[in-house]
Amino acid sequence: MFRNFFRKFSKDMGIDLGTANTLVYVKDQGIVINEPSVVAINNRNEKILAVGEDAKIMLGKTPGHLTVTRPLVDGVISDFEVAEKMIKYFIEKVHRESFTFMPRPRVVIAIPLDITEVERKAVEDAVLGAGASEVLLIEEPMAAAIGAGMPIQEASGSMIVDIGGGTSEIAVIALGGVVSWRSLKIAGDKLDEAIIQYARDKFNLLLGQRSAEKIKIQIAAIIPQDKPLETLMRGRDLLSGLPREIVVNDANIREAILKPIKIIVDNIKSTVENTPPELVSDLYEKGIVLSGGGALLRGLDKYISQETKMPVHITDDPLTAVVRGTGKILDDLDNLREVLLPSTSSMKYS
Image (cartoon, rainbow, N blue to C red):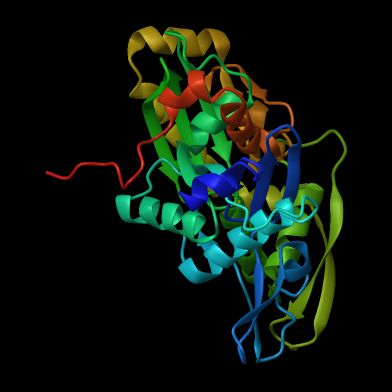
């Protein structure tokens, strides 16, 4: 009863709880938070020191009594308590200026396709524990498709590939449901790891994850560019133990990340192969839509198009497609409620 009372004074929210970044949409306001899913904790008193961007700058630089952690791994919660505290921090941040006492918002939150029932319940419990009055779950590619403005409730097929930080979600959608799909633990983080491994093997250079991510953003290109891209790669020399920097180009990074990219493309092909023929004809006409941070990789759309022989489009502002989808659900809940997943508490067990 009290939850419903306080909800009247709270702001309904849509959350894209990503492995790399958490984005928050507030009804009637739009996207108000876009910060890394990173938390800094003081081990001496178990208190949170920083969340988001302030915590990310501490990665790899902390003394022994501080821990900087990412509470989500491969799209699912790996540290329940820290995840709950992080979500609570974002809920309170949204309501800070409105001076709402005990905010109890309704929250729409996106989850990966292959999440288990236990993992789904962990998400619900974490959001409720953080202060939500009600939790509404939606599959990430469905949210991304809604955010991209795709006709997900029509009988024609639509295909979305959402490449995030921890997972790549591939789905063919029709009549408000997912017809065929693949969910991979290969996404932005794995590309960073591939660059780190490449630097170690090729140049005897040890990179940090933030350095690898920065290089990926600066010069990664899946298809050769008209003008080669170059940047500095700085790290620790594995032979001397001293700092060293070298110049690398887009061809080096392409060599580093091509294997995981090919795995994603192979799974896109497999998803199409498992799609009913009537829907495949729709896909060949309308093409594939890319969303998520991975969609920003230079030439990825052209590479996927070459490999699948299908048109490929990048949605507007691909980084925010999922959270914009949760926002559209909040704005039109009556018409879009059917695309939501059932709550674990309402599910019947045989």
